[in-house]
Image 1 (tube, rainbow, N blue to C red):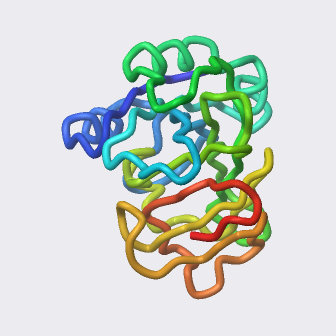
Image 2: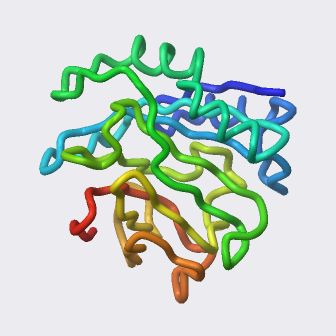
Length: 194
């Protein structure tokens, strides 16, 4: 079963709605597998401070993976219709960027991040400046991370890509001193560090 929420930046109203909606990660626990999608930005361009994202939650990781593989029906259209692709990105398909987990060694609850471009990280970057937008329970809850589709991922302990960071090239079975500290995430092309 899927529940969908669109977030534009760190809107307090939207975050409160996410907390009140059954089936979306709450401030006290993460019980479902969710997907979070955003638009690509050409590599070398500044990441937007307030990107459009869309969040959908499912009862199992398999349902979430199938949703992204099927083109995130409904979410992709919602994401691309509410934010123009004018930043040089014209492809209208989905690509899995990576997965973050609440436990070490890729265990616990998972969150699948995807992008609207279809190219993976080849020539583009994807930024998620506020992990709390995924549901406040995700902020400072990530303890392992995997990247895919030609991406390396950087986790930051502050919102808007600030503070201490760890580069997962492409995976981090443990976030080391950054465990339970991720507040923002960027997926970049292989070979580019945050």
